[in-house]
Image (tube, rainbow, N blue to C red; front, side, top):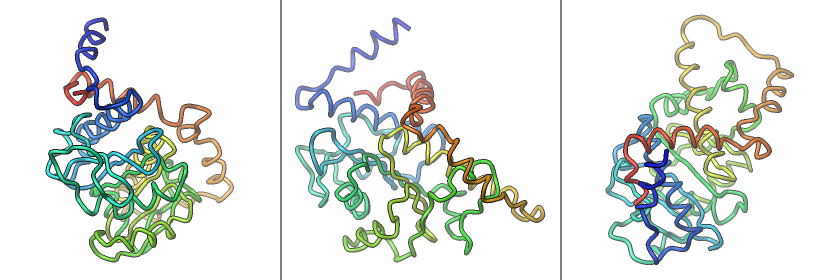
Length: 259
């Protein structure tokens, strides 16, 4: 444990970043490495974005061209809600990264973290006419928390950002039809908790479909599951413990993301 503390201290904060921004950078870089560890990557595409503390409409996003396994705290790109890069960056950003991320961060005060993936199970469910089926343990925790947005093509047109925001309707999980999920969190660990549950719900749904009739869950039970799902609740850490556990795993594998 002491060795790890000494090792982490060796990744000194560059002077150009405030302490608050650096902490956010390290946490977001850890998330990218966690997604890589879990196999949730899509080559160099998709995005996890995190608002910079105390800097209004500015947020951090991955540099376009790097694999998630190459993302570090210092090479994350800071942008405003219009996609303008703030400060120096050796890398551009993918225009699709701020089309709706920027709209969400700019409009929703509590939207500190936005995550979007194309994992096979989640994208497959987004391609189903009926979407997510609330017939398993994980999906039950998302009852009343899921919205849908119709597919408009590749998300590079800024005007679609407002339509995506309207489709979300304040819900933390938005399934882009024929495309993939977007989750919105008050913190990064909370967003990760939503993404974990969405991923597992879709995996179980696809594994159970075609095996027989899916057994429905009564609405009253679904409502109770939402009430009792402590992993999203800020009062109980909102996913902090689960995210920290996975961060320890990626630290053991390669703590270089802290640079």
